[in-house]
Length: 464
Image (cartoon, rainbow, N blue to C red):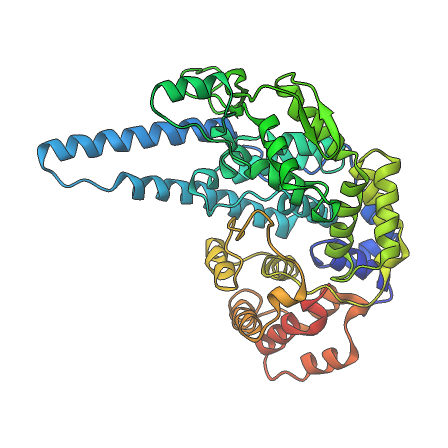
């Protein structure tokens, strides 16, 4: 440990950030809180791939590719020639787009100078989960994060809530684009055609349960249904509107007419703005403040966060009317945040990113990191449900998970960082967080590779 590092500097980089790069703990130690606060900017978090195609572009490309492959398959069938399955081809195209997006994101995380800024952005991306388990949304996840989440992470929560709820990725993932009011003009038209329209409650339910007030707010199933009715008409423009194809579109004909009542408040029937005004009220609700404060405290500090920290974050949220920059500053200013006990167990993503940060990247074949994460149970862009990935120790610390981390640590140490000095790297990675026992164990390793693998598997490195 050098004299230039401090415990608070190590906490800033390894707990609030994504792990240390060489020299980063020393740099943060001069002013640990300032190191974090300087990353809270009104511009939000930068895009990890500025040239990424927009969601609308991806939507159009997907539709064109699907039509092209269907046409080719039909032509082949007429001539009796074998043809590739268009569904298989389309899914391969989706995986290719999503794979590139994920690789760009994880490489950005491994190299960024602003570890807290990136961790904060990843937290909100997980909060508003869109999962690639639904194929039609998979190649829109990258654009979703860059368009709906990252620009707003230090702004008003309401802005991010509206942006996420109206984004093509969320509308497709939660089946909102096809939701039609039972008594709308579109429903009447479909009924005359012999088709039965459907009201879909997924988006309304997840906004209430996961994105805003949480289940402890005491809303009812009737509130979910009423909210879903208010959101009818929130959809996407199709190819018949080429200037807006793939973008959010409110369809008045699909909107359920009538006044809606959600959580004790009534909302006049004014089309799109009916749902928007409900989102506003949810965003400024004390229930939402408490729900978000608890999640933030749980993610950054402890699986069982102290109530004092939750109340501090909640107060900052309410005082600022949902300004997430102010909430972030309150987190940095709270003494609980700087408790030296490393109790948060890293997810697989956090583990491999922190390894790459201290090791200088993912090696010659970075594209292999996706399958590695899948083997550890965190398949890229594929959270198991709208709840997103868990970040508690119980979800990631069983014996099989730890064995897979050990196997990868050994491989990474031998193939990527084998020539590095294990003790120098341990000091750079953990600073004063490195315990004497861990230091002695690393120093006594028979080879550099073994010492480096031990470093990555120490309790200090596995926790933040």
